[in-house]
Image (cartoon, rainbow, N blue to C red; front, top):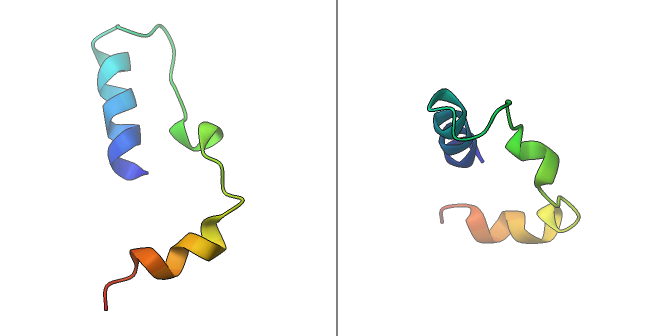
Length: 42
């Protein structure tokens, strides 16, 4: 999510969007526990 937040901040800094966007507010975390093993390095 950090890279998405960085992108949102860049749009704000360039005044493409008028206010700060907190990307985490739009993330669906319902499946995080199921997906977590898939994102871990083996």
